[in-house]
Amino acid sequence: MSRIGSRTTGRPTLAEVARLSGVSPITASRALRGVSTVAPELAAKVAAAAASLGYVANPAARALASARSQSVVVLIPSLSNQLFIDTLEAIHEVMRPRGLEVLIGNYHYDLAEEENLIRNYLAYQPCGMLLTGFERSEPSRQMLAASGVPCVHMMELDETSEAFSVGFSQQQAGRAAARHLIERGRTRLGFIAAQLDPRVMQRAEGFRQALAEAGLHVAEREVLTPEPSSIALGGELFSQLLEQAPDVDGIFFCNDDLAQGAVLQALRQGVQVPQRVAMVGFNDLPASAHMVPRLTSIRTPRAAVGRSAAQVLLALLDGKAVAPSQQDLGFELMVREST
Image (cartoon, rainbow, N blue to C red; front, side, top):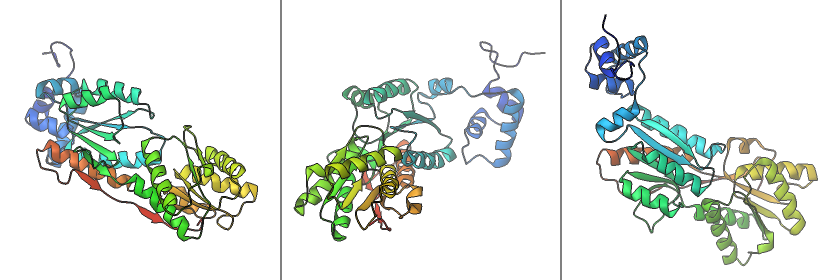
């Protein structure tokens, strides 16, 4: 009896899967990658054959044969933030029907860590990359430029760049929060922020600009820390702001988890929201609509960003023209009881 598998490894091969299922190796490959154009009955036969042989695809061999892999790399700064979870789910929904594998890299807001991820992932010859924002190290920029791998940036827009991006204006979101609080009659406005990544600082810039234009900006009403954003930290920073600026009557938080923590801390301290101080969050995380009081927040199109960025990347991979290169999906102010 002939030995099943590759001569060098002894593992089952794609050719054996194709032979057992009665299809060509190309069809077998497409079926195993989940390409939607393969008829369901053929896909089922290929899957059964692969299962019976114990076949596992070799992405390195596939990349070597085609000069590029069937993998798309997605680099995000956090896996603990609901914002990026929603974005990743949407990316998977778009990529799966095309049979593309999504490789996720989490660089924890560390540009050096992102640089290492880029270097390691480029060695696997991905067919495309989805990147968060525009800030990265110079070696990272050089590697991406030299690789020729199509890239799409998410969450931010940069009108000075020709790079492809899908997102919204973080700066305009900050301005919208300030305008809303001013329209509510608040004149002593504070800002609380953590993590301090580029998008947070863009929101801060927009908020400050709107306050300055209204003659209301006071630096002492800001509390910023590079610590990771969390509900617990939100409560601490709220108490700190009240100590250093007891007259504050409206606060914009760089993220909803900070605002949620502040709502809870206000309840503990007997500070009435919004009577004593109004609060506006950012991202409109699911729990915000169920706080007491319900939290006003800026809803960001996190799933739509992932979906659209993935679609732009697929268009680039198919050699299609993409215009405009910058896609602004906007944001929405969700007005609730906290203001």
